[in-house]
Amino acid sequence: MARTKEFDESEVLQKAVSLFWDKGYNGTSMQDLVEGLGISRSSLYDTFGDKHQLYIKALETYQKGYGSQMCALISEAPSAKEAMRALFDLIVNNLLDDQQRKGCFFVNAGVELGAYDQEVSSLICQNEQQLEQTFLKVIHKGQETGEIDQRKDPQALARFLSNTVKGLQVSVKSTTDKGFFEDVIRTALITLD
Image (cartoon, rainbow, N blue to C red; front, side, top):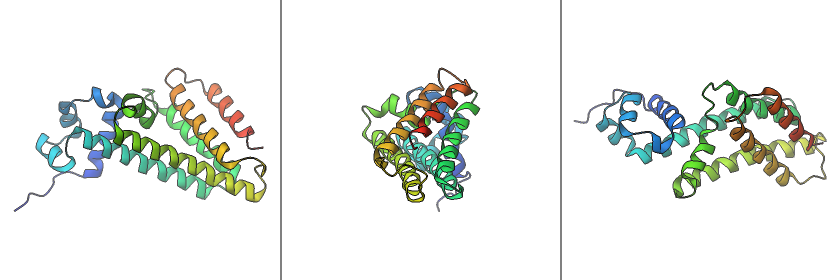
């Protein structure tokens, strides 16, 4: 008879996100995972596979949660420009609220493993496409309502805004000056006019 799990998988995955985000993939040992997740080594292997498989699942968990937040913001915003502002505010507030200044879990993963780990690279590409598509959706909505200049290439704008977000996610490692982030956001939003 199979034993029932004595832990909540989604809770353990959230803990794994925190551990990997804090220490990186290479800096997180199996012992760190066993201690930090609060489960036995055998339970870890039986449920999540090896360290790499757990890391992939942690990235997927992070992506789903963040993607859901962005979609909710877009659907609740009364206008395209307010949706854009809300997206940037969400991203910057999450970055600045983090006392450890860890930056973005996905950007960190890309820097650490993206060049040689195909699975991680693929997830990073999916995450970037998700952000770009989120911006593209808002831009199309804004062009339909006349808020955003219809002569501008929506794909180019979405790529620019997505790249701006990546820059902000890296910049938090060297500055927490709210004015710096406000200047970047304000300038990025001017490109929509």
